[in-house]
Image (tube, rainbow, N blue to C red; front, side, top):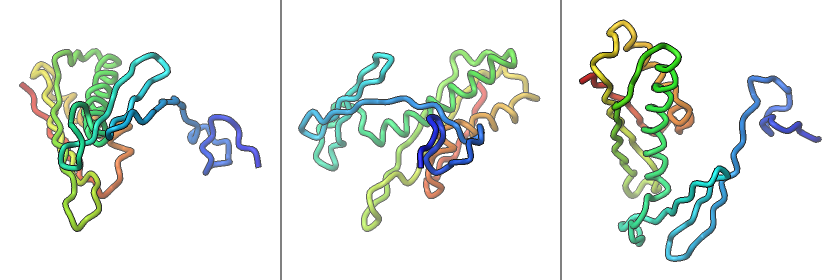
Length: 156
């Protein structure tokens, strides 16, 4: 069976709700636990394994990129919502802690708590909606349900 371009292979209904946008990121193994990544728009970066598993930790690890992606996705999604609603979040920041599981559990992400710091000038009546937007960011929505990823919002 042929599946039309843009339709998830598990979904053959053609329902537009199941369509997706595709980006092809190329990855090559550079040796010594490092990979070089390139995006079709031009950006490049290298990953490295963490020290605790034999890497040099000279670059973000793949799981670091998931953690960083979560924090940046939250801010980007809130920023896009803010632009549509006349709210400037310039200067907002986020920090994320990456907690890996420990043996005997298989090595994987276990917890990604995020603290988002936003300008106190954001109207109080808009904050609940803004926070829901952050929780709805695509990376947060894509995390496995076993990963605890709470988001704390601070207004300063």
